[in-house]
Image (cartoon, rainbow, N blue to C red; front, side):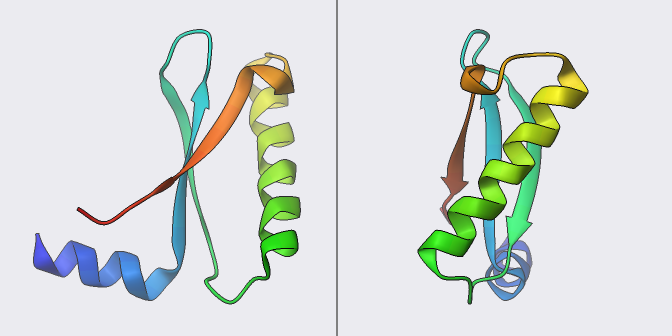
Amino acid sequence: MILSIIIMNAAGKHYKFINSKTGYVIFYSSLKKDLSPDEAKAELDKIKAQVAAKNCIYQETIYWEEMKDE
């Protein structure tokens, strides 16, 4: 358990993309920690668009949450 937390912290910030209609996580992604908030949002928006297209659902149906260490 400790090892996985160390690896998560080293890799950057981790996000889960959730279908708001079902509540299911449909995709996981990571971003570098050193991105500015605007850069991170732009990257998350790109990923969200790709996930929506791949799953044939509206972009507005998907939202993301940052995964926090427990």
